[in-house]
Length: 463
Image (spheres, rainbow, N blue to C red):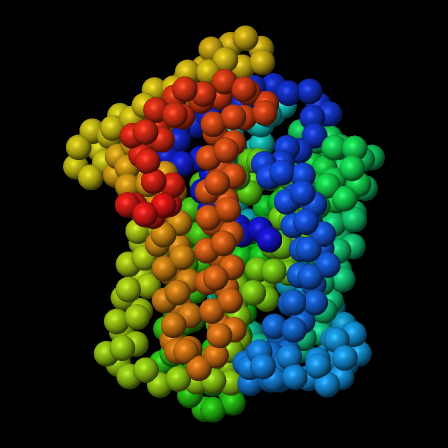
């Protein structure tokens, strides 16, 4: 399932894409067997898993064994039916209220004009970079509503199961809408069908679907709903624990602080995210949009969900140590992206760790016969491994989870999932850069040179 954060090509400079036929279908990296297996598994298993995770965290004391025993005793189908909460009016009001608020902020808040990378069909997507403003307004508004007694965030936690259930079904309907829109009213020439309904629904029909001229759907699903809900739910869990116990445990404070710092970093860097695989390559389908609308709010926030009913007193020394280690990892993750952005912005004429960057100048030919060049950064963080930025990202997730300690396995599901996701993404990105289906000579021999100079994919010295 999609994760709205990882970077696009490893250490690469800006890469203009060549024009492609308007009907170009989405490409897949894995074999047909792996592709179909993963699609059908995620389509069938992810929705019930979201509900089972909520039930286990909130009603089964975080114990996978207790949930398993319940399903065993009642039967999987009947047990799941009894566990699964039906969407309520309150849940729909919360979802629509939050979604409408974020959509209005996306459209109306001022922001600088930002041009994304040239698309495979030769289009240049234009965005309004106002994510940080929207993030600040959202948190200030949410906390103000609680402080002045207008709305109690604990209500969100109390209706969390119904909210997730509504998101599961509502987001599936939304993905069907995207599939139909891609067929009958695509927003740009960056769209097309593979000829297979399942693949089109799963991977998406459109690269940059929009409603009207200015409302970008992927920015809304990935950033303004998915990532914003991560921050809002982190605050919600903290407030719920305070209302239950009259205090917030230091474990919850560390978890909440690190998550908010991470999400703040994301919105500070949001325009950079618009140049990544999630936006510039992956189309708007179930994989990306359902994942950001449902998987991010439920799975990514799950360590905090667990801590609500399982406060852990770490003590000042341990709590501070975990907090500082987490902040350091988040900073390194940010600095990786900062180095690459500065390298791109200056066309390689910058300083990396106090000296001129090491680079490879790659040339390629577009389908129009034009010769283009691109720079590959091979020093700084990007000289350690081709996707080194994934290492501090995984460690960041570990540090905001470890305050839960190790009484139960489930709080660590997100860390495990993230590790698998990013290692797979690193492989997908490497495969794409070495043999791009739209521009066969995108990097070619230069990518082999890059891999020889930076031999490790993710973990320096190991992998």
